[in-house]
Picture 1 (spheres, helix red, strand yellow):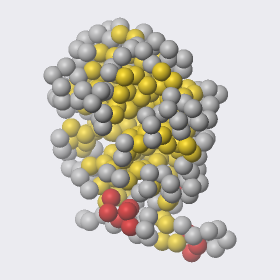
Picture 2: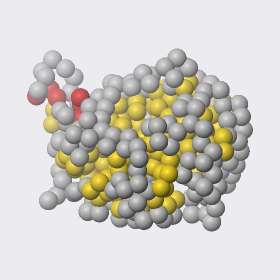
Picture 3: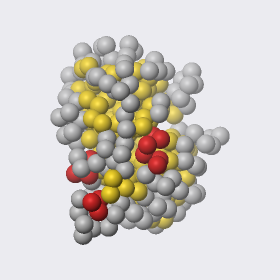
Picture 4: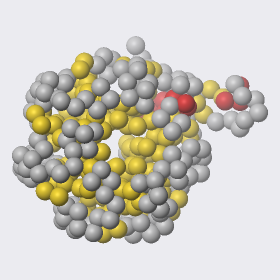
Length: 323
């Protein structure tokens, strides 16, 4: 059945508020789960939840648990490197599957902190990609698919790493880390997979960076209570870009071409002009829900929520709301 997103006016529901665009999303599975991360491998979609990993082979119509070997079922991060799928858990470290999640094996040698908050692949498609893990106690990397890990924390003054993002628009690999806690945070940069970091936070509020995304060669940071900030110089300086963003607790960011999505404490926002203006694209349920993860697959946007499972909508329908 074709999924449709319908534009309605909030004015029709609450006559004393300003009008904004809204949409009717379709709940695409796991209705009571908290979904913190997504990944795709070919036509297989993976959702990391507070109850393990789920796999969909039919574009999110249905999901099946794939948890054999997982000794910790609280997932914060997923990453795909070739035929390898890595799962980062809250207290159980990193697990590896080489068969689309049918079986998982713990790969934690050298990890001195096993609360994994983020994962990233540098050199995707290379013969020896580097996998980075952001934890509640610093950053780690592996060059052998998790057989062993080493800490890479030189000059990393904030050791809770909520987000990792690799720039693929430069000849030299650039890895950004979003770090911090409630009172102190920032963005850090590692060039050419170096274990040495530099802080790139001029203009950022001093709070935790929850999410990172790169769109049109611009770097975006989602903040805990301060909205979205944009950098046009690889993090050297930042500018707040929050016009239309009515909720400033940003937990997730994602891009699709020139379109940027922000997941907040109160649903999904969309920008087609690099964050200069945001449009709310929620229905009643999403407007009350924390959005923790995004996945763009084929022509649909999938949203992972806290306590309300997976929602989806065609990208084309969402884009009509920003016009």
